[in-house]
Image (cartoon, rainbow, N blue to C red; front, side, top):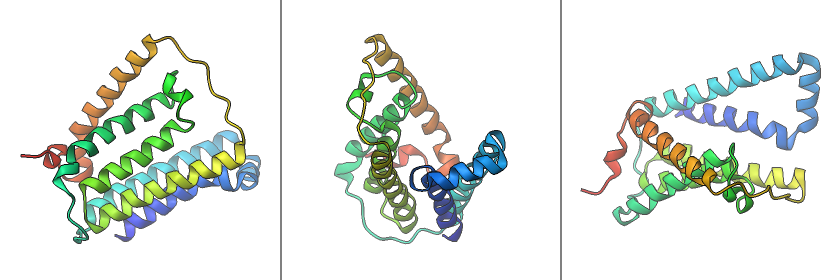
Length: 191
């Protein structure tokens, strides 16, 4: 569980620097140069993700609570919505006029959905930790940036493209989930 915890702390710390310590970030960019800073940041993020995956796979889960089977389908729907929000975070969408931070909101939904589906210690650490990080990040960014200026609404066809991309992302994740997490998504489906 140590690798998992360290990976989470590294991931959250790296991302919180921009919103909680912008002066430190600017100083580092000035000393290292923009490209070197981005390269080091990217490598550290990849390292944190590797630590999270390997830490997850290496941890023997301890039972904490029993997830309710009645919440399986709602949790899976939350996951689809989470990935749709993550897709629209980089694309034009009417959802961006309703949700100020679609990517971070998607992480929150992703974390909550996984907590509804998993009741073990490593799930609490990973999904609870990522959910807390995303909420802290949202609050910090709102404080730093102030008022929200809503983007223009795109053409309705953009929503169809976003939905198709989200379906593709979900399909890909269903495929790689057994390798990443060690369990297939179908393991959560009611029999």
